[in-house]
Length: 160
Image 1 (cartoon, one colour):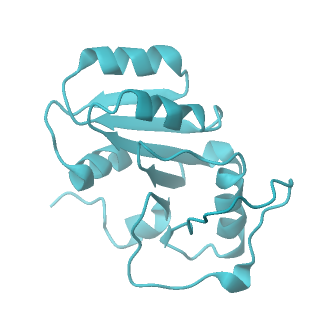
Image 2: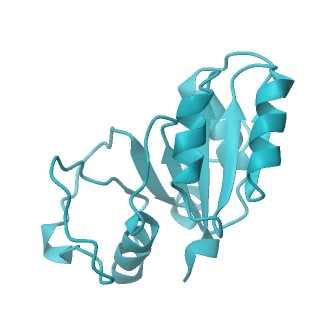
């Protein structure tokens, strides 16, 4: 597994500078899909001209957060997806930490990070203790790491 096995999906509504800061924090080897909840061609061109690893989809209307994320997820071709808010920024080790957990527990559907106030060590080894993982009925927050194979098994992306 590598960074190339992850696609980041970001739903935006005219986020301008926030989305640029977010995109700057993502490893350039990782594919990114931005779903812009508008028909603003200038935003699409700015994003795609600035980032070679980013595809920007214009929804043409404000679909809302959930529907726009689903549109982005339907375009993901990698094994994993990270749904990320446009105002979030990633630490350099974030994607590697998600992959570290994925290697340890391949049977997950969603992993959510814990937001910490103080910065942790930025050593090359992940700061994760698998024993600290908690199962929960729902995940909410600024990011959700998805194992798309698990979603496909339950028919999440099937057309109704």
